[in-house]
Image (cartoon, rainbow, N blue to C red; front, side):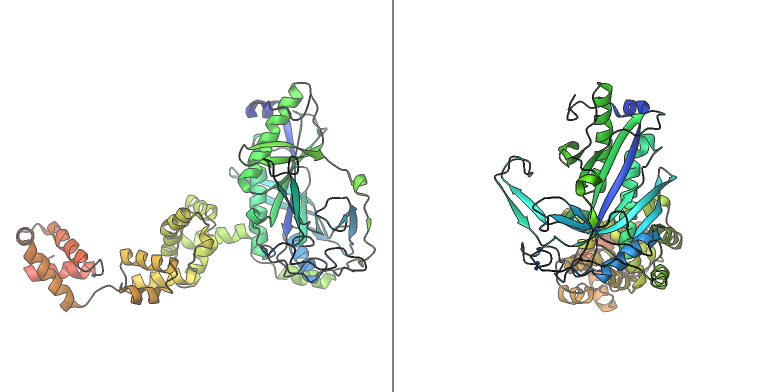
Length: 503
């Protein structure tokens, strides 16, 4: 029976019958200014084939030179993952032909990686799951193929293909887990939690922007099934280049259901790469999976081995930042947040923005409120992330300060933020240009109060008779007359004093 059968087993039944085994390979584009073995820029989004040179195009006679910053970043990653850093390692040639790799081989690391035997603890449903790391090794990225024509965007059925070599040679670190067993029904959630925790860690290390939507972080999800209780692993498939946290979870779940259906029907699983379809949540066959022997690895003759000095490695270890989950726990306590409130900030990628706003002088509750409420609404309406909004934590803190000083009301503050988002300048410039400052001058407010009372004598009589709650109508009229710029508390005081009523 073909492994491409469309039949899917019920997930709960699949988990009851089989034990899933995961293996996750995460490719991280490093945030260096130049490529792994040459001086070409790594900037994203440049016109095709404008960031290339004889080295990354593999022209005859061009010789590679290792990017020292990339090596440092790889060591930082390895140390943060509790790996042992090799005292001696080297690059190898991984031989295969695809047109997006100009050399016809990839310079990678094989049996002598820079970091081995680590782990990363992740939280799933309140429990800690330790994911063991087999290795983290350095290599270079490939170019980008664009298949034109056809319906799938893949090479099958395309009319022709375009190649952009700007990405060829960009530094990568590939982080490979050991087999992840014992997860049962939580296997998809564990896969997602691991990639999410790894993304947070890499971002805190400042080694990558981890933009999954731009390919800076990509996950290959290996899945196999074995009959429940059987210690022998089944044949695995590898779903390639999954590019979102949600898709990692969906791809693993789908493969469990698909493989269970194949096995229960008497079929066999083919060791192959598979592609994940975001629109359907399904995987489809790619190519037969090569083995190490197929790649014909041998030591790279054009690069000398690396021997990281122990004192240099220890210096990097001493410079590692606070781990993101420890930082979140500290901030949650400092800000007095519940677990749910902190989870919401994490889900919105707002923790760093709130922290920066607090560092700029805003109270934590005000900073959180702005980013999680009004600015969250603005981001959703624009279809962007919070970080992509054209407003800085410092500008948000300034708006908070203007409200605290009485210069702005809450309503006016939102108008100021709208002005900043519209590109009208910093908060003070928006206040001045739009004339949004709160009116607190008693003479101007008294005139507005007198006019409001004269226009509503029946309301004035009710206030005099002791029905002080009627003051809200007068305050509302004054706020409308002043376009929301009156100091509402001061207006209330003036209404009572004008009518000779004790508040």
